[in-house]
Each structure stands twice: as structure tokens, then as C-alpha cells.
Length: 464
Image (cartoon, rainbow, N blue to C red; front, side, top):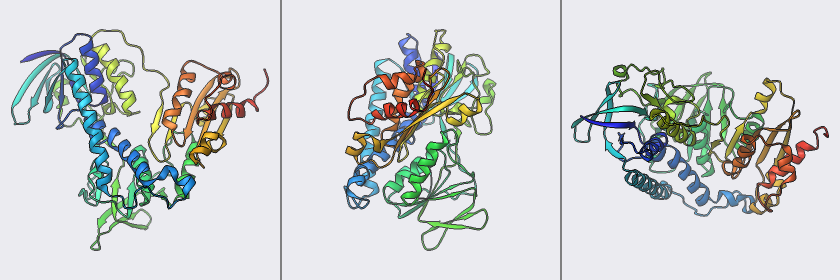
């Protein structure tokens, strides 16, 4: 049995960052990956594919130019699934090559196979050809990610009825699509296909969506979706999904409504990929959704020497936060000092339009009883917005009346996930309204919206 200082199960964002951190500390590291190539869900079916699909859709459809040339404008008249797939394959191959090079350069050993615990310090790996290996380790990190939730009443076939992994394999663009689930994944795919002029219906059993986002942004976002023809069916759940003889799918809704579309995407949640790990052998338990409980500072589980990071531990389930979780977990596992995870981190939703947020929402500020003022800027108020043909998009900042510090920054619109980092830096450095008012921003840029929003708040705040 070969012994390692650190074994990582899973090579997604948390696993890769943890393994490389441990290797840079001079430790002997093994990464076990069950997929055909390294990268995990993030590279193969999650973050990178969905964002690549989004970028390809916006470029080939001419979406970004329609503010100038009208809704009928298209860069490529007859878009196909193959057009979307071509760019995706190139991007994935590049990501995998970079990751394989990082592992090789840092002397991280990788092994393809299914891992399961034998005891708290030992794992068994079933290899590609059915062969079995055993390894022991001082510390083990679980970074196995998640798999789509697939309830029994949904007849998945990966031809007409997909989950969020299978949707990447579709062989043609449908004329109509129903998306069940208005979480982050459902919203992203619903808006991407809508930008390709596919008629999209979005179903969500709750009355609201994305409740952790500032509700003023959600109001603006919802208006944009309805304005371009998306149908939102909230407050009723889908009870039955069936395929009809005419090639269509039918969704029977609670309350009697029937919805028909050519394809269906079921994106109502994901589950931790822990079912095959034999957690009982090491004394760990997962919750009903396969997630593992950890200490939020060290990412240690209830079993000494075993850590978990990434989507398998639940919210926020972001590639960016997973990377930091993995790195911090590796440091703690190997007895090294590590900073605490930052209190405020940016959350990006790669829908069309993008949404990004950092800090407290207006609802959270009110709940805490903090005296505050808001400033709002519309992208159409900036020169850069006019140059780009933007008719929509907004930036909102929330400031404390007592300290004048920035409490939250929220953006919906083109480039939101890039712009948010200005707000993130000021927030974490405890900056105030005066930073935005007194500093100069490049002209013309969308970042000017920060100064416009700050002046909007300043005009209504008491003079010191």
C-alpha cells in the first residue's frame, strides 16, 4: 500500500487548488478522478461549458449588437448545435491541458478511478480496467462535487428531456424549450437559449427566484426577461412530464395548466456525489442531498484528518469560492497557517444579462436596522453604454448613513461579473462613499456607473 501525505478525491476547482497548494508545500500528493479526464464537473459539464456556450451564443447570434441594429440582427443566420459545440470543445481541451500541465509541473500524481473509503486513513480505488489499488494518507480532502438531481417522475432520455449535464449533448437547437427550476443553473440556461431566439418557458414552484439577490435587481431582471418574450410560470410545480406522439413534450402543472415544448431541461437542484464513497467506513455522514458538513473556517469534517470543499459542502457552490476553500483546507490539513475565508465575496450569475453581487442586499440592511441610503446608475446614462448600444443594465450601491461605508454592491447587465470587483475591493477595504465621488474613472467606461451611483446617493445623504 502506497502512502501519501495528502490525497484529494476529485479534480474540480477545490481539488485542483488543494492538490497544487499541498505540492508547493513539498508534500507527496495524489489526486483521484473518476472522470475520463481531469477537471471535474466545473470543466466538463458545469462552469466552463455553460459560460462558453453563453459567449458563443451571444457572439454568433449578434445579441450584443441588437441595441443598434434591431432584434432581427444576426451574425450567423442559421445557427446549429454544432456551431455551439465547436467552440466548447476547443475551450475544454485548453482547460484540461493547462490543468494537466499544472499537475505535472508540481509533481502531483493523478489516477483515474472510483475511490471509496476502507477506513479513515485508507481508500480503495477501482481503476479503468477493473483493477484495485489501496492508498493511505495523513489527510484526505473530499472534493467530489455534485450531480444533477434526477427525480423518478422525469423521463430523462438526453434527446428531448435533459438534466443540466445532458443539455450540452443536444444535437439540434429546439424551437421551444421549457426549463424547470429557476435557480442559478436554470436561469443561466433559460436566458442563453432565449438569446438564441428559442421560445423559453421557465417553471418554478416558488413565487420568487434567486432570493439571495437584491430584489430591486431581480425586478429589473424579470422585466428584461418578459420584455423579450420569455414566459415565467411561478408558484406552481410540474407534476408530470411526458413525451407526445407528435414529437413534443408536455408538462402537467399543479392547478391544471399544460405546457408543451419541443424540449425540456430539468434543472431543479443538484446532489453531492458522495453515494459511492462508502462514507460509513470512515465515520462520516452526508445529508439528504449528499452534502457534507464542515467547519466553515478550516473545512474540516467531523472526522479528524478528513476535509471537504467545493460544491459537496453546499452554498455558495461557486468555482471561485471552491478554489479558496480547497487551498485553505490543504493548509489546515498540513498544519500550515491560512487566512479565514473573506466575509464578502462576489457572486456571479452568467445569465443574459449577467448578475453579480457582493455584500449585503437592501433587504438584509433593513433587517439589521442599519440606517442607509442607495445610489443607482443606469448603463444607458454612461457614454460607454451609448457606444455599446445598451438600453438596459443598472448598478446599485448601498451606503451606511452613520459611517458612509459601502455595505453592498449589486449589478445587472453587460459585464456585471467583471465590474463587481471594484465594489468588492472597496467593500473589503472598508471604503466609503467618498472613494467613488473623489476618484477618477476612465472615460468612457461602464465603470463610470460607480461614480454616477455614488453621486446619486450623495445627493440624498446629509452633509457632514
